[in-house]
Length: 113
Length: 115
Image (tube, rainbow over all chains, first blue to last red; front, side, top):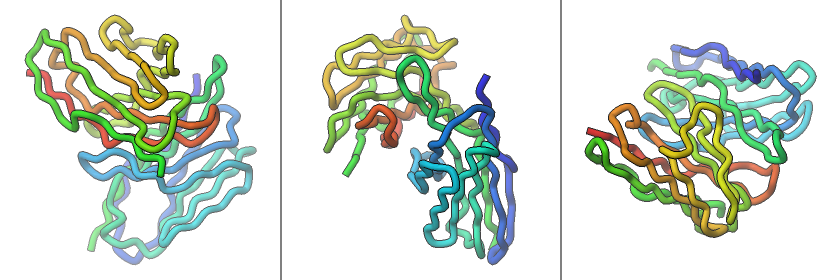
């Protein structure tokens, strides 16, 4: 059974600090997506990672993908309060002739002022 | 571009009634649409995958007779929750993709409360 696990599940950090969220998955895939979700809202696309070694950066967030290790990371640099949200990774899998996302468990981030 | 809408954004219904949720791709034609359910403080769980003009493919454990999905056109999919019960209360999110293996674009979600 495919598993997509995120670590940590909860993260409370001070403003200005750095931290990394990990997304591990248990089967082969070279497409992985990161999303942000604010309370009561739907998903906001952050990064699209489509190959081994892909690295994308936007503002204080940087995402990378290592398909051999089946690992993606979301690195937060100098966190600010506005980054408080829940972050999900999603692995795109092929099965029965179609592709579908399997979402990670989510990481709830709280940035303290 | 790549905007997906859902209607309604929230709905309250009485136990035993049916509720229909619409998902539309506004500026593109979607080869595939997906329906997810999300309970509070949990991740998104895929309920079903639908392609225009064909029957939806339901994930294991999802009751196809309870959650009716119709994908009438390349821009519209509907989810009907039949004989809703309080345990069906959840946040329902749809998504759509253009290409077979392309990125999914997510709708704003529909919050269903069954009383």
